[in-house]
Amino acid sequence: MDPLNNTIGILGVQVHPITIAQLHQCMADFISTNAHALVLNVNINCLNLSIEHRWLKSFLNRADIVFFDGFGIQLAAWILGHRFPERITYADWMWQLADFSSNSNFSLFFLGGKPGVAEKAARNIHAEYPGLKIYCQHGYFDKTQESQENKTIIQLINREKPNILVLGFGMPLQERWLMENWDRLEVNIALTGGAVFDYLSGELRRAPRWMTEHGMEWMGRLIIEPSRLWKRYLIGNPLFLWRVVMQRIGRMPGS
Picture 1: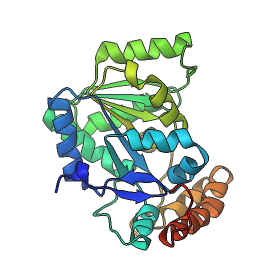
Picture 2: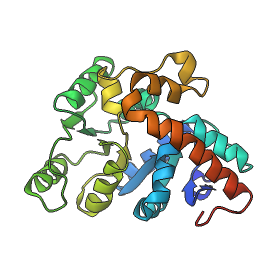
Picture 3: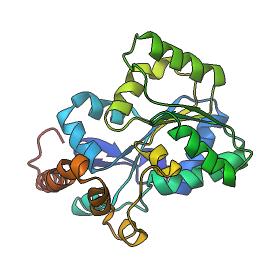
Picture 4: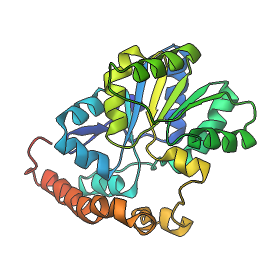
């Protein structure tokens, strides 16, 4: 079955039950045909935000691929009578993406994070994949669509013409920026990675492996950053599951 033609609807967003191997093959196909493809990801927070922001739901459904990140989406699919083959979490997947890109001679552009963070993330990857071409730019600039800083960033990206652009602004800012600027970006693929550069650079601790592998990464993140994430997890997670149950029994409007 073609992974691009198979989706599962969760709260009105069509999510592809795709494996990493299938995702890499699709990305290779996009690049080989010089496509202009959006490859976005969803977690519980993103799908909750898509209920609050109709533009976000529309943008997600415009993407060529939407994969899932987090056990919460896996649980939602199970509640709805479906299953996902595997979750694709940026903190782990970026190393596989680096290996795939290095072997395929694809170039990357890291955009986001505080000054120096994307560069540190790139250095850590280069230690394993020294031949991989990675361009970097921090995310602290005026992201207003017509600002001079924003235009300069777009010119910088287009000068390098990377195969894969990885954004790390956080949700939903990264999706909003990408939506507003997508038609002006000369890249084959855009990815939205949230805090990926903070993890790759070592600036942000990750939850212990026993948590990340058993559906408890959210708890680990909450322990590490309680003041920033308490609302997302302690209110957002139960709200998401309630919405999914309402979808299951046919009482979730707009889903």
